[in-house]
Amino acid sequence: MELPTEVELVREVERLQDELSRREREAAGKERQLERYAADLRETFKEERARTQQLTRSYAATVRALSNAVEARDAYTGRHAERVAAYGIEIGRVLGMDGLDRPEIEFGFLLHDIGKVAVPDAILYKPGRLTGEERALMARHPEVGAEILAGIEFLADAAKVVRCHHERWDGTGYPDGLAGEEIPLVARVFAVADVIDALTTDRPYRLGLPLDEARAMISQASGAHFDPDVVAAFESITDERLRQIGREA
Ligand SMILES: [Fe+2]
Image (cartoon, rainbow, N blue to C red; front, side, top):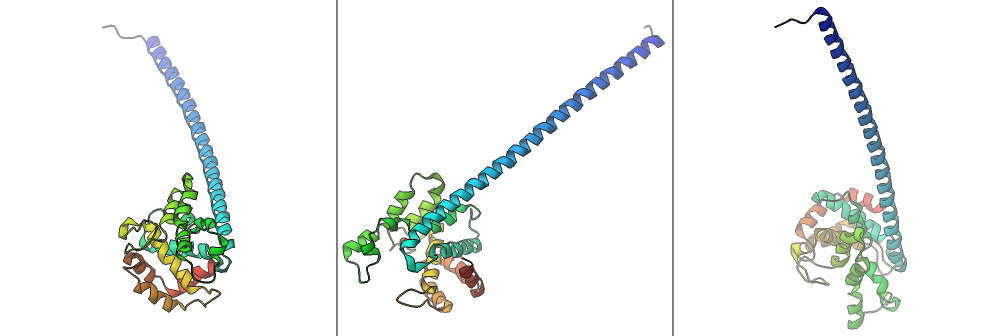
């Protein structure tokens, strides 16, 4: 076999060097292109996140406006829905409930009584006892509320609380007479949060109960009105924390 001459060897080395630098240029070009893609993606992601946050804020503002509209009719309850939402979220946290970071859970708490818009003032504000027919109409507010929210995708979870917020653990609630874990957890949490606030706030016809009396009543209804696990979670929250939540909401 004939060995290459020195000139041929030098040419071959030069050719290889050219090839190498060509490939390096190509690689550098590709790397720059990839960096541009990455920067574009980061930018798009940032914009998308800002849009999502803005949308979530708009949703939350809309839900709050709706909730305030419902509460404006029921003047004496003040910021009942907001406080119930805050108590409910705290109980959910103790229970390790999934999805607490999503606003949908709070939306359900805030809108629980939205169906009352269909209850005439004469019944809503009637000072005396309601007749059977009036009670039946009043008792329709969970279903009416769920119907109002039906078809609003971002309120699908909220609609569960709205429909089930008067169900009771022992199956004696309404509208569906669900019992135990048939009742969505979020509605079982709501039930306790609702009663904490109802018992501890002043009404025109009575003062709010001291916290220890309200606690005793809730503990007593564990396993009947309320899910025992939810009551246990509530019991583990300190008085100080409950007062703080009540004040902040
Ligand atoms: Fe209600």
